[in-house]
Length: 104
Image 1 (cartoon, helix red, strand yellow):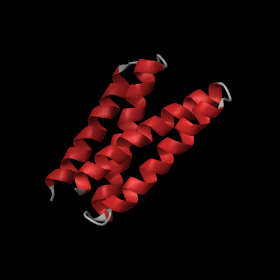
Image 2: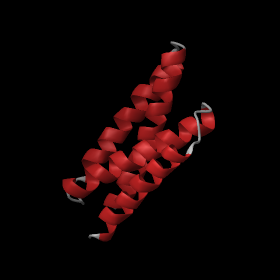
Image 3: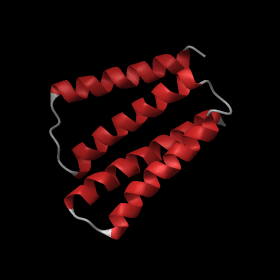
Image 4: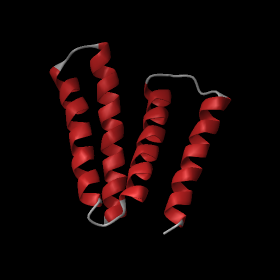
């Protein structure tokens, strides 16, 4: 249950980051709801995941998945560069997240 919560929390973190980017470009109430709502739901699910998993595992996984998802979303939605250093960095983050999961 904890892993499912943290996975869903990471998805909402990415939605919050997308909302933040959109809101920064144009102030609009729907973009503000996506921004605040995404991060709020993400934090709530993160909190509940701590009932099942250790903070030393949950926090880096949540941040790593959220960061990776936000970078990928920005590459796809906002046409940010897809160069080797970015893709290599994403790969390192994902390997780290998988490594933390494997230590359980």
